[in-house]
Length: 81
Image 1 (cartoon, rainbow, N blue to C red):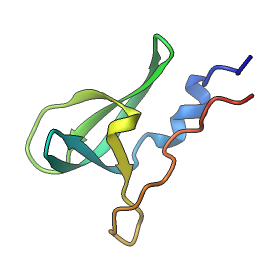
Image 2 (image 1 turned 180 degrees about the horizontal axis):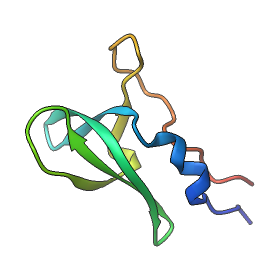
Image 3 (image 1 turned 180 degrees about the vertical axis):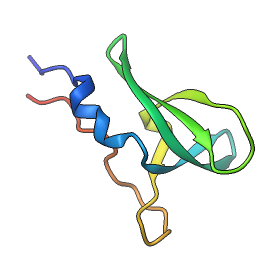
Image 4 (image 1 turned 120 degrees about the horizontal axis):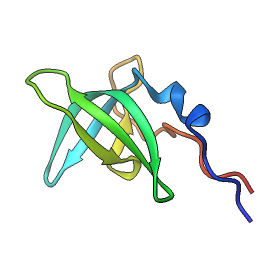
């Protein structure tokens, strides 16, 4: 049985720059908070410009590395076996 991902495992994602997919567009955001909801990793994101926040599933995010180019990178660890 896999070990569940804990809040402690997810906290390094707070403050990360990410690109969030909203239908056909991607919006640059910053991760403000994290939680595990019903076994799904969710992150609260705020846009780099504009206002508001939204909880999204980690599958909708792509981490933006320091060099500014968007590439798929694990934002939070996967469940450990």
